[in-house]
Length: 499
Ligand SMILES: [Zn+2]
Image 1 (spheres, protein in one colour):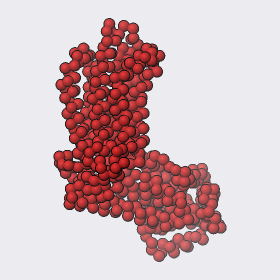
Image 2 (cartoon, helix red, strand yellow):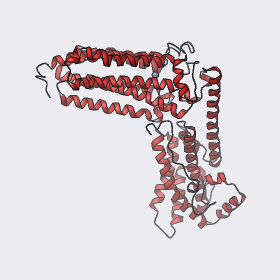
Image 3 (tube, helix red, strand yellow):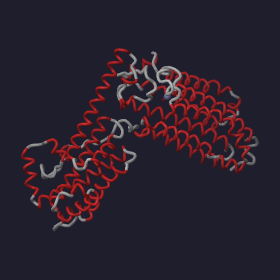
Image 4 (tube, helix red, strand yellow):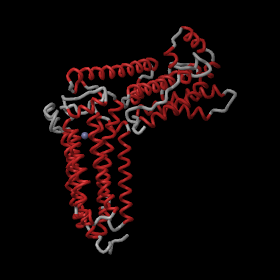
């Protein structure tokens, strides 16, 4: 799957495996306890409270399970969670500490169970003394400790499953917080967490159904009618489409909505760029003295510009689809288009700056291309697309753009600062346009000042679209200047500059 952002790829946790193996009812933990609350279950548990061997056996079985369940949670964390805050780290570190310290005591047959129970209790007391303070004997503490840890694991696992159901970022993060803050009532937290996740999932489904109904009735709906994952800009109040099929999304391109300007600005822009690439560029004087490599570099720029415009048009056409997974995938597609355009534009400057120095040329081009590839991959990460990450996204693209100035040091050293200024002057116009557009995009101006007034025309995203198109056209002009300068320097086959 190209994009992991919206759909969580979690392996399902088979009931039989999740709930333990050989001693059903005793060692199975809270997951099964939740499902089966028969009276004999409680009675058996009580009878074991006073049986030391049974407690130690339970500890053994729990530790055997812990390794595998932790592995599953770790795999999940790696692929779905960027950061863990301090309190969450503490809970997770406890599980890890118990696993690690108890694994050191493995392999002992005689008294091994008791020793590991002791280590488990000591490790827990180190961190959560309160939770075990009321218990007196090692057996009681061990049993309480196992229950506590099982509640940690069960909570995390159920949250992870809920994330898959909800497809909402950060739910696992919430799960960690819940675990740590409600240690004393761990059992209640598990049930509550499951209930909350179920309610959230249901609420989302209901709000999607409601939005579809509203859209069928009124064609366009208000921001307040949008389900939460579709809410991007709270200052654009009306004019939203919401469709249950892709065909409806496609045909809505020809109807009036708050995406009309966004869609057509880049669709018309695409035809403009294509006409330049296939008509105006071949007529230019530069084209007639270009080598195949020169034409290839120009082609990379044209391709990236077209890809950016196509991806953007696709996103704005399809962002009304009533499937969260699909909607978020199209958002990823939009971002990858921008990254490629920025990287390809920078490549044209590097290629012409070091026209006669192939070694430097390829080093800089490879640097930019690898960053560009990073920019194509990054948007598929869930955190990157979050509503509150607009500034982070802008920061990434601005830094990617700034890498275009990486050759300045070398150019200043070899040819002087004045030469650098002269060389970069043509591209300043497009950089300025992109930069101002990006600032407007992130700050949601002007609609932030008069919400509702710029719903259909004149909003920050409309301005951003024209900035992108303007940036492309300005960069095309700059690229022609850069090539003209490079050809001039290359007369006599790059006499003094070969690397
Ligand atoms: Zn856009």
